[in-house]
Image (tube, rainbow over the protein chains, first blue to last red):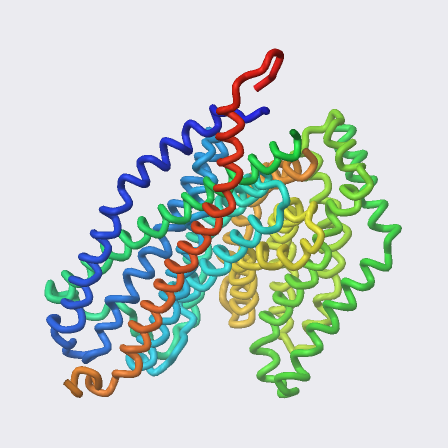
Length: 243
Length: 221
Length: 64
């Protein structure tokens, strides 16, 4: 029976650490999100210009932050997987992708729901929204690549190539759309920044940001565990066939 | 060097012999572009306004159709594996195939663009800008397309995934390409836009052969 | 209380945003946990046979 234990050494250690962190991660998530929601919905004041709709910022901005951070994490993980062939690196990126895609989707939709009362339009083609939309496509393409290869180690490398090319492209896309917008000078460009952010709004925002990060870590641990066990399952099944 | 040129010549000859594929691509381009006036209305002002964009998008989509031909045929009959075992490094194999693709599939598209541009009432200055921008920007289409084609070459229904992978990456080319045409029509300098396109092409030229070669190694292992 | 739900007339937008965010994220958690349970369930019998295999006394000439 040829099971290479060496291959399991790293993932097992990873799982052990992850399992240790997990309960803390759940607690942190709940505490942060509860605090953030309370502050955001009840305590923070309505905005002078935007009224109550500014509260949407507390779910929109953290989602956007996560959308971008998760993709960066995937790019770094994939690069590590390609360079050092660390088995958990590829699986980390794979596990993170659906979470990032959800955050991107939420950023787009909540942004749209914020845009309508604020600018009078559900969608505008400015650099940030357009880049976020393309980011969603990149996530979907990435997940599709994993599903399209029978051989999972090939899928890992192909997906890694894709995410790295995407990473190079995102700043280019953002730059080009930004520039295209200034060229065409849309009629009314109200940006999301608006007036300077007051601490009464900044605090809930940061707490929600940390809460979303903590939520990501929690779901990530669950998903990576699934991926690692899934790989073990496949290997055991292959070994079974060989006996 | 000799094997590089030999491969280049062989691919171009093969493409030439498959003339029907080229005709279909060109027809698609023409029909797709024709749909727009039918959808948007024949008013010439409107057409002139959207013309550059429509032409560029049409060219992108038509180019997309030709991408699986870069590696698929050779992959399926084992020739690709043979080539990869040969003296030429995989990056150069990829480069030769990309050049062949660009010359035989993309240049014809560029050649019929002026006629279509006239049908969309694009101003004469715009037509020249269209040609220049396509000439400078289209190598990127072949280069990035090759990476996508290499990633999906082993998949059965890779064509659909190919579009999803490649089209987002085409967007900067589209934007700068259209911007250069609009600049020309507005009698403003188009050089800066063309230089940005050139930058993209050069950047892609450096990165894509390696990425595509890596993807091919995966497929052929 | 009603004022809280109305949110100055923007209630629809605000509550849809929060509701959708909660919905999508909870959905993600549920699916992830389901997938984990499924994999653990599939893995259990195989791990069992491996373990019982290991516990069997090693016979002469047996490979491991």
